[in-house]
Amino acid sequence: MAKWIGRLAALAILGLAGFWLVTEPAVQRLWFASAPAASGEIDLANGRTMFFAGGCASCHATPGQGDRLKLGGGLAMHSPFGTFHTPNISPHPRDGIGAWSVESFVTAMREGVSPDGRHYYPAFPYSSYQRMKAKDLADMFAFIKTLPPVEGRARDHEVGFPFNIRRLLGGWKLLHLDGRLFAADPTKDAEWNRGAYLVEGAGHCAECHSPRNPLGGIVTARRYAGGMDPEGKSFVPNITPHKDGLGGWSKGQMADFLKTGETPGFTSAGGSMASVIKNMAELPDADRAAMARYLVELAPLETRKPAGK
Image 1 (tube, one colour):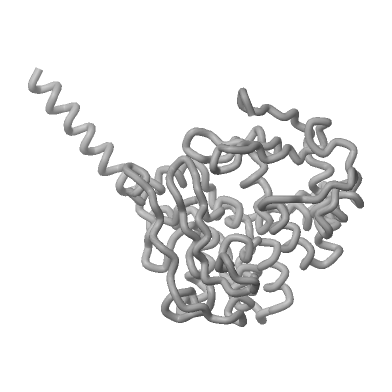
Image 2 (image 1 turned 90 degrees about the vertical axis):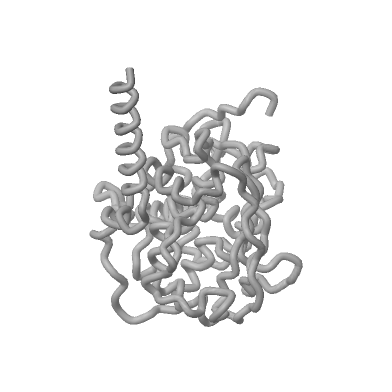
């Protein structure tokens, strides 16, 4: 019996050591190694487009003030795992990201790793941002650095055990982060692929409009079919072309909705979607049209609401 206990203990120690190794951010970077670095001249106009497509202002603008470009953070995001407070991402050199390098910014956005080597919580939607090109992220970072620096840091996250052990996030990433850049579909045209890139990457639409598994990862087979909001209070709509979702919407109607927030039935987007529309309204018409095209051509999926919702 003592021999078996010793063997089991050795296996447990080996297992923990292996888990500790594969959840180290520096080790996990290996599957991002093929991603090309940012190169070329900075394009601030493109950076502005990526900033608004990415919804940065919706989460990081300081609550309670009218300027959506003052990115002091502080928004409280409630979830089953705790409350996350969005950080200051203004170009303030001490309290924001003004002292970051472009490489640190790209790593944070695509890999969910901080400049000091810690895992970020996936309330920050890097599982979608990982699809973005380094050049687009570099342009976004350059645009953010033109915005006003905001002094002050957001409060710490309120996350209980065991979710406060950040190393465990490395295990989450093994399940939900693949490190792949967006790959264009050669059977589709440029507009469709542009829409796919913006919806799946910067726009991170699936992050809100999909159901999640018990670990908080998106259920891949049900992307865009609707899901509970992070607080578990309401159901975020199905946005596939199924009759349960946006069935019957044309590309033009979807593009108009992304610009105005007004549905074909003459209702208006409310709640957090109203903030999303403010972002989408800043995009070029061609980008909204491309996103609309991609969305109305998604595979239709029926809605499956939890009982009582």
